Image (spheres, rainbow, N blue to C red):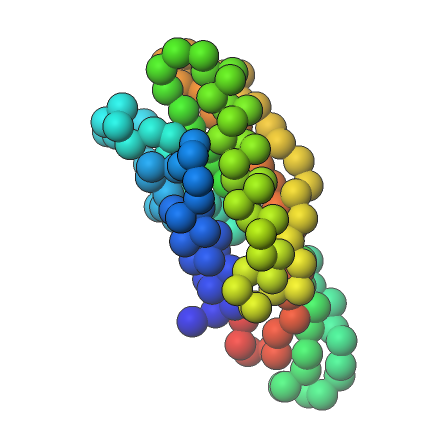
Length: 143
């Protein structure tokens, strides 16, 4: 499996095991909010996005690279006190991922870059996206 997938899978596993407010549903797959039961909230979709890479060594095909991959955690809530719930789940995600910044030893560091609230979402739901930068080193052909 690729390092990118290992990192994303680690994030899903960590969020699934987090404390209250525990994400009830964490996945790497797209979701349709209308298909989820109220009991499946808060729900989180983990997405790997942009990545910057640079060469660390110039050893032909087996060169070592340093990469910084962005990972978005789209957090969805529903019910009463949407703003309170958004803030609570954002805090829980940040705290859960801060416990092991190495993503199980695969990464060098994980840091929160920003939080974005989606104001255009259906008013029955709340959405806050946390974007993390995950730094890792890999050998070309192994990421």
